[in-house]
Image 1 (tube, helix red, strand yellow):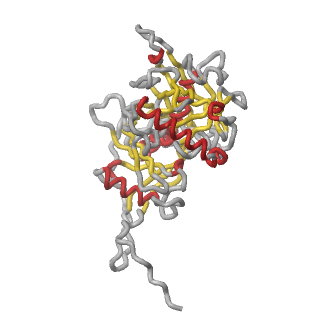
Image 2 (cartoon, one colour):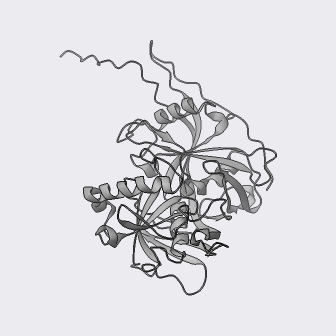
Image 3 (cartoon, one colour):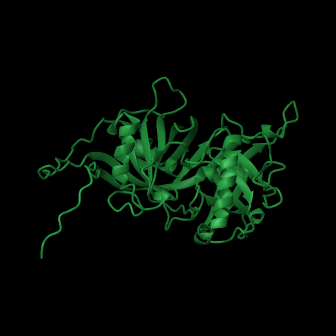
Amino acid sequence: MTRAHAPAHPAHTPAPAPAAAGAAEAEEVRCLLMRGGTSKGAYFLAGDLPDDPSARDELLLRVMGSPDPRQIDGLGGAHPLTSKVAVVSPSAEDDTDADVDYLFLQVGVDTAEVTDRQNCGNLLAGVGPFAVERGLVAPSDGDTSVRIRMLNTGDLATATFPTPGGRVAYAGSTEISGVPGSAAPVLIEFPEGAGPLLPTGNARDTLDGTPVTCVDNGMPTVLIPASALGISGYESPAELEKDRGLADRLRAIRLAAGPLMGLGDVSDTTVPKLSLLAPPESGGAVMTRTFIPVRCHTSIGVLGAASVAAGLRVPGGVGEDIAQLPDEGSRVRVEHPTGFLDVETEVEAGTGADGAEGTARARRTGVVRTARKIFDGTVFARPAAPATTTADTPRA
């Protein structure tokens, strides 16, 4: 794929309206809001944001309207799935494996937190189209493939999407669960990851008295039989979020899994994810309920599904007696609260010279997602707050 050079700034930047005396002027940043998969996020060129990570994160909190449970004064949608940011830049000239770099940032909704501790496979679906929209990659007439380096982990992915006449096509007939209507397909393929599929070295561990399989096929994930937690695994996300006893157990499992998976103290992070497994309901391989990490996902993330699908193919894993894997082919249908996500995955369950079961590797992973451009323009960040004052109350 031919790389192109994008202008550092938009061709025309509208002048801000005059600020009132003593008021801070709103900062304006070029932004493209896009649905990627079953998430929605703000996409930025890295060059349009501050170089300093602290200054960048502070600006993004104001852009998204955080911290505020409603995010009423920003772009955020009052849920982790709609409080996301993608920062995209050209890859280094000597990087022969990628065309663009993608940094995912999860912005807290009611907390003043911005974290880069995980990838997002849903927003990944929009990175290729965004790279073409911003001129980072020259499109082909037909389909365009963009090689993406995910800076959060260093992993690679290739996104292929239709570009008839050299323009990104968003309309199409591909449907994905959790999104109304249809759109053009985005095929995302992942090469074999550099890290182990089973980060603890075991197909099965016991954490807080609960059998689990810790897996990382792009997203650190703990697979847990729902029945081991005293639930069916078919409850609605709202029902599960109300179960405080369940929340306490999941937190204990997550905190125990962190060090074993090489993630350290995860008390203030969004990884690992927790996926509860139950037998399928609608002809798939398994039913899931995924916590991210406190809220229950209304569907499932792309990389989370990739980890679930690979984990189900590990001999001796907790999914072995739950999942109904297809007799032929590599496609695994992962069911979730609003439908399903199909994942193509091939796992080599080698035991290694020393007989260790933890040497299993995911040789290939691929998913089909969709993305849609919602708006492209300028976002005006909430002005940085001065010292808190009490507003004057008009007299009657």
